[in-house]
Image 1 (cartoon, rainbow, N blue to C red):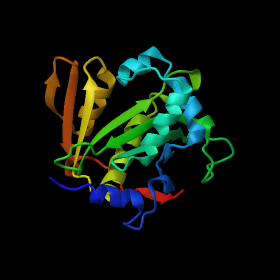
Image 2: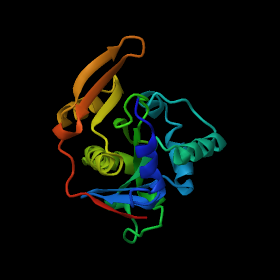
Image 3: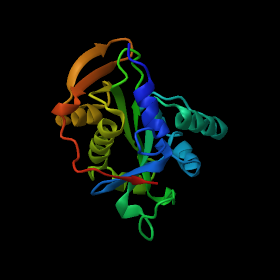
Image 4: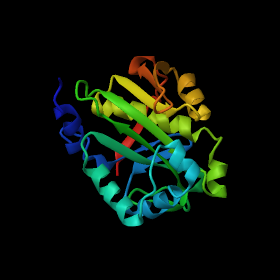
Length: 215
């Protein structure tokens, strides 16, 4: 069993990259920024949508509970969350330190939750569809770009060698996307109606060069 030292080191900045709150990553259409307290109210609004709750296998929370979840996520050394910003929705140009809540369209996460292999990361992506601007952001390739940026980030900062995605069988769009990227079906849970897909990092079309800067 591997220790959590490498994952924790990445979070604590022992690799010279700073704390996990200090990174942001820039893509062609999306910017990934730290999940800040300023983002929580809008994120909470998304998660009142029954369709998103079902797609993410989540339970509805109160706003206070959402703030508690945010705090636990930011303190957890085995989890990393970015808020996905749509560049086209950023008002006045991107500014480091500005949460740019007006441009929020979703989030992307990795979890290093396999105690036998902390360089294996489960990855999740959500592009919200609660309002018309979010609908506009769907279909632009933001989800695919956010996944590719997150995986390249995870390889660089956490040394991840394998990615895993667990997707409800009814979420055909996500299944199609991950399979398109090179993920292969690994198992199926008839209890949870969930498909598990996996891919080695070396087999994925990761975004390179990836722009990672201090927040």
